[in-house]
Length: 251
Image (cartoon, rainbow, N blue to C red; front, side, top):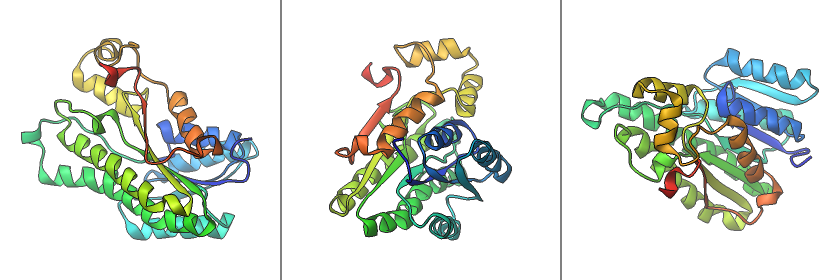
């Protein structure tokens, strides 16, 4: 198993990409520290894993809160001894014209999507550096690579994650800690459903406009990419952008 014995923190593990990645990591032998602002949802994920014989613990976690991060990191070390993988997955999304976006909405987007990633790296990467190894995967988006109408706040947050990932990768490379970002297009999640409803067209039509492959991505496809980056198979990859978008950014 590619993650046998490794300890991984996954944020936003109550649903969608986070939950699917957690289940996939468990299949590969990882010991899991799963967090989500929705405590009941993340406990359900833990229950699925432990019922199948895996090891996992849950935390209610506001990723924008530094004390919450300290509790998660302390809990991970107390239970499992170390941290080998961090998947900064938790995030929020909205589509809104720039002029209609309030300062509070903009700041909330940044607090979760950017500050949450920053705090995760701040508190986890020193633990990894002490052991001389570790892998951090930060969830960005194709919105962090190019512009789209109604995405000023979201694009700002994901663009920040993209560059912050590179900064951290350079800073920690000699310590043996790798940091990469993933950049999905629309995936079959609640966020994807929200985009369809906002556009007021069918999923198939939105997908045909966005991606040459003509469909939304599957959560399982993203989980496989995250698994690769978490594993030693990606040992020479750091500071890189891994795009998973059905060809959207190729257009």
